[in-house]
Image (cartoon, rainbow, N blue to C red):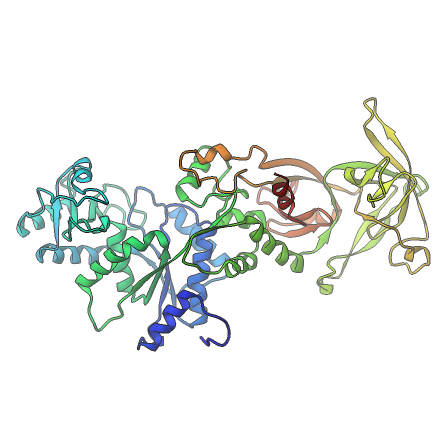
Amino acid sequence: MSTEEKSLNFIEQIIEEDLKNGLAKDKLRFRFPPEPNGYLHVGHASAICLNFGLGIDYQAPVNLRFDDTNPAKEEQEYVDAIKRDVEWLGYKWASECYASDYFQELYDWAIEFIKKGKAYVDSQSSEEMAKQKGTPTTPGTDSPYRNRSVEENLDLFERMKNGEFEEGTHILRAKIDMASNNMLMRDPIMYRILKKHHHRTGDNWCIYPMYDWAHGESDYLEQISHSFCTLEFLPHRELYDWFLDQIYDSSKVRPKQREFARRNLSHTVVSKRKLLQLVQEGHVTAWDDPRMSTISGMRRRGYTPASIRNFAKTIGIAKRTNLIDVSLLEFCVREDLNKTVPRVMAVLNPVKLVITNYPEGKVEELDAENSPEDPNLGFRKVPFSRELYIEREDFQEEANKKFFRLTLGTEVRLKNAYIIKGESVVKDADGNITEIHCTYDEDSRSGSGTEASQRKVKGTIHWVSINHAIKAEVRVYDRLFTHENPDGDKEVDFKEYINPNSLEIITGYLEPSLASAKNGEQFQFQRLGYYCVDKDSTNEKLVFNKTVGLKDTWAKVESKE
């Protein structure tokens, strides 16, 4: 990497320093190490972009490694979802690895630890262990089993592996320092008994390695040069290095753990435990609910890989945890979609408009530009007739001078069509407007080149022909939480801030060009926002998700508050 191209973040500075100090460039190897115990969220997206981005910048391999050491919480479904998410973001991994690939090596090393007096089998209850571990300000006390003989430890550990004991009766602990200032160094657990079926190794093992034991050794076995993780793992670094010290061969690359800060996103949660809670308790429909902060949820909502990568690049890498306003992510999504998706017309809050001087039964096929941003997308035909739907908000019976849409006695242009003038309204018994009657200027058709077509009017509104419109279910999403930091106060249950109005389901009327729209296709509904076809769509019933509005409406709401 050339330092002239851009200023380096502190992670890149670490790598550059290591290269200057003699690390061969071809020894660089990175990894993204998810635990397959849930779906990935926006925080993982930043970590994916970091590690795979480094791989691209330094032309170094990046492994996708699943830290699958807890079969009680891990499932193949999560493995498949994670692989799908990483690929969707646009990245390719060099090797697909699993901590379970190394269970035998880890077990063999544990045997060596026991033989060298570096590990022992502890038979205390979890409550007894907690008491003897001490507190951050008081040292721990030795386990009564800490000085078991090597022979007894080897025998017990093998019997643990063979399934002779029940869960919770024995554990294997590293023998380090019960008086260490770092609580993680006070004889940490290396193995526990878990008689659970593993998604890859089946029932071959009755003991499973702890994350801290498996993680660094997996890095070492894969010859990862730099192991980047979030700041909560900073206290773990000492243990990471201690474990490596016991097995390190100086002829090999020694992995280096370094930490960066989480980038939390406002109005959401990024704890897999809390996301699982939202799913299991029915606050959302699934892991890929478009209100979720999961990558699969963002994909279903219509966010693009490019927008998420750009978001990760924009927020960068830092050493301090901070809260990023979700409006920045939405800006990145809006910016990308504006360049790439076609414009269409849809009416989501309809009122009937009748053009009284337009011939009954007449239908015109008008030309509509698909995107002013990309002329290559060309034009489409849109049917125009006497009876249309327009947005109810686009008409006011009486309006002030700042209202540039349709009123009685004023003119507006119908997008891609004619200039119309409001003449009268029809109301129901409650005084609600049911129809707007207007007249049109026959010579004012857009693009016709006539003098009337070039006449300037103050507003342009969208529409759909009633006889040709397609009905669709439109799901309008709002923030899932009303508070910007819903899990910031440990005294308050984060679910107290769930937004009861986070989903509104309405019926929309769409131009007929959308009849063949397929799952995942994205459009700008002109003047309304960006929408995509949901996977629940069928040939009989189209379903659209609102991805993001054309403007940041939340900024106005929050400024008022």
